[in-house]
Structures are given as C-alpha cells and as structure tokens.
Image (cartoon, rainbow, N blue to C red):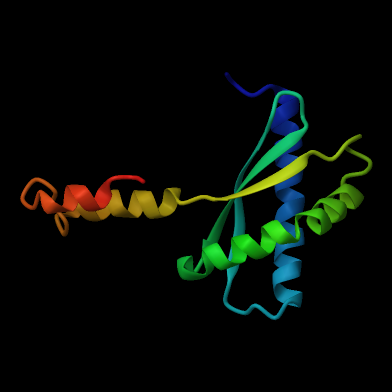
Length: 131
C-alpha cells in the first residue's frame, strides 16, 4: 500500500529534525568521526508509529550506536516533539533500525566486478544467505 501525502509529509518533517537532533547528540557526546544519517522515515497509516532507518558510518560502530539510540528514544522523542509542536498534534512512537542498503548495493557491485563470483565459487552462496 502506498503512503498518503500526509504520511510522506510527516515522515519528511521527522527526518529533517531527527538528523539535526542525532547529529547534535553525537557531537555533544564526544563522538568524533561518526556520521549518522536518517535515510528514511516511514509513518504508519494511523500516524502512531514512525520507523526510522539510520545509516551509520563507520559500519563497525552501527550496532553499538543503535543500542544507545534505542535506550534514549524517550529523550529523542521529547526533543522532536518540542521542535515539531507547531506542525504535529501528536508525536508518533519512534522505532529505530539500521539501513544496510548501501552495504547490500556494495556487495552486489563487488560481485558484478568479478571479485567474488558465486558462479565460479559456489561456496560464496552460503555466505550470502540472509539469516
């Protein structure tokens, strides 16, 4: 089912403000050299839940940062509510996920370049299966 205009608008408002909130939190927390970007925000039809997809660079710190962000969700939600109080009546609940689409695209690109060819080496197919 396609998103309505209202869902898209709320998603874009949340995305813009979340980038600012997360970057400020990262810089104030003393995390240097870490880039957090919000790649997508999907809002449910009833506007009660927003699924936030984050791209974190470098990838090795992604899981650790996601745990920290999830534990601070109430604070992030409160900060967002303050920023969007003139645009939204109710702040949706936030659910955070890692967006690994860039890594997935890079894996496909490496396969197409021939560095890892599953046709010539069938053992690679077992490594690529999603769990």
